[in-house]
Image (cartoon, rainbow, N blue to C red; front, side, top):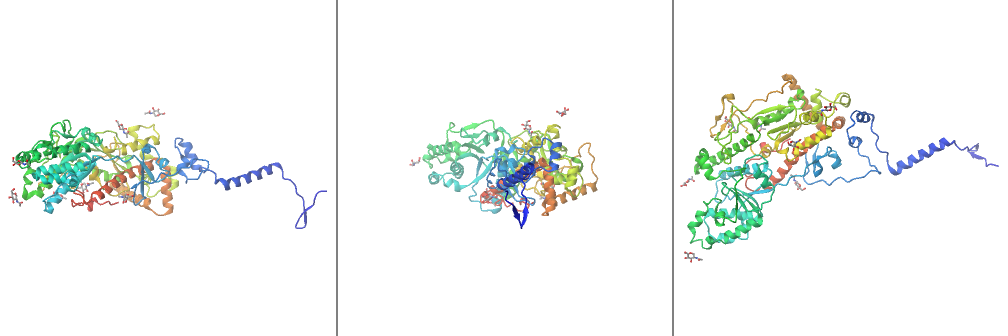
Length: 639
Ligand SMILES: *[C@@H]1O[C@H](CO)[C@@H](O)[C@H](O)[C@H]1NC(C)=O
Ligand SMILES: *[C@@H]1O[C@H](CO)[C@@H](O)[C@H](O)[C@H]1NC(C)=O
Ligand SMILES: *[C@@H]1O[C@H](CO)[C@@H](O)[C@H](O)[C@H]1NC(C)=O
Ligand SMILES: *[C@@H]1O[C@H](CO)[C@@H](O)[C@H](O)[C@H]1NC(C)=O
Ligand SMILES: *[C@@H]1O[C@H](CO)[C@@H](O)[C@H](O)[C@H]1NC(C)=O
Ligand SMILES: *[C@@H]1O[C@H](CO)[C@@H](O)[C@H](O)[C@H]1NC(C)=O
Ligand SMILES: *[C@@H]1O[C@H](CO)[C@@H](O)[C@H](O)[C@H]1NC(C)=O
């Protein structure tokens, strides 16, 4: 007899549910248990994403990039790589962050850094040190020492732009050399002593490259001599023919061996007896130290042509206007004039290196005029003839240069697409996709539905690489080529990429290695004008011609573009949640354009941080911006 069950006193019949319900219960139970133990299921793409993936089947990593990271117990979990030192820069939009790694040629930085905001950049190239020696002994006049410091600053900037780490040594380093006291007791001729102190300071630093601060690199980046010096392997202690004591290079051991030999040389055994001979040493080709050594001790490089040395002889014979001013009463003026001359020669070298001229890239040119203002400003100053005290002069290492002619300045053109040529210098402006879409679709504000319904993806990148890659490459392929143009050793020296949202560009003189002309003669086509300081200033080239076949918008439309650019800048800075969501949506829609923007922005921020850090280290030494009385104002880092 079955047991009668009751509930609240009523009889209950207990029936076993049908099999299908049993299975359903079991499934629900299992799901709950697995949710509790394992976590939520992997994210499911939204309808839009699936639809996009069907339309654009080549887009990789779709859910991974678009959705918040979900902890997946079955997938491989990974730690974020540790944050590297000095790998962030503040910005009014979002912190600029980067990670230097060999895997930088990946279409997506985030797949390496596991961090949406951090761009992967190529490892920072080690800068080989180049030393110069400056001894302000006996120079009490502050204006003279400031003028000399400005010249040394020019020296540091020029070598920095060529990939070196220029450092200014002084007697402080020479005093650390073990033989310093020995030589001081000899009471040598001051010129000979000074030359020995240069070598002592160099020996103390462990060798490398030693240059006079009037020896500057004046050639293209890939010049054989400069490339050799960058490799930091100096098999023989050497000097360069015809550069006198302008430049030496060698390993530390070889330098110190040479110092030992020189100090022990017969001439120095009895200084009083050999006084005249020692004084004559300073005049020898290669300088006093070379005179104390035998010719077997130091090799003479005969093929080097990348370095210009403004030796006293060179100035006296080639640049008489400057030499005349350098006599003692007008020394400050003379030094300033020499600085202007050197700056003009560095600028001229740049102009000659890029014989095809300057390209200002303007992809999607119909509505992006406002994006090109900065680039055109820089390009016009670069193509202007350098301001110089002797306009028709050539650098000392190239007697057959083509001096700049104000009536036929360097070429400059707007191009709708990037052109890969080493004779063409490219200046580009990389917009955030929000900025670009707002301009391109002529809309003051963007919203998600407009983007989904109307906007094409990665417009900017595709247009930029059209000429180089044609129609048939994926965006993933294009973005890597773009990264190459920005950062690869072949592309980087030939291009400058600005970001559209950054209002001012600092550091240009460190990137180019010279000061861009800041002054132009107002004579229009009348040609150059001489100021009261003897500087000949040329007219500023006009605006580049519009791209052929593209209608030039009316003034009022351009005004609208400027307005939109301003609004886009504000939108990107907005703290409003809705606005931030729209920006994030636009970024997801244009993943490759966003990647390009992040990459270019991080590359230029890293370059700036590298330089500022180094300027900080050097600020107490001769030739720093602080000592040269510059810094602040134009050099300040404004955003
Ligand atoms: C150096 O030469 C002078 C004159 O030739 C001589 O009088 C002196 O003794 C020499 N000194 C040494 C240390 O040899
Ligand atoms: C200029 O040099 C001459 C000789 O070199 C010297 O006599 C004169 O005192 C110097 N003048 C100044 C202002 O230093
Ligand atoms: C690009 O692809 C199309 C269609 O697949 C083909 O007809 C065309 O020749 C390709 N163009 C190039 C430059 O390869
Ligand atoms: C530009 O061309 C050079 C050789 O002509 C090549 O090595 C380099 O990769 C190219 N750069 C880009 C960005 O494609
Ligand atoms: C270019 O030169 C003009 C004056 O001719 C100056 O106002 C401007 O600041 C310069 N721009 C740069 C980037 O040096
Ligand atoms: C620019 O040139 C004008 C004359 O052409 C001159 O008066 C002015 O001082 C110069 N400015 C600078 C910064 O060199
Ligand atoms: C670089 O990093 C070091 C240590 O992390 C820090 O002390 C220094 O201030 C940083 N320099 C710059 C320019 O950010």
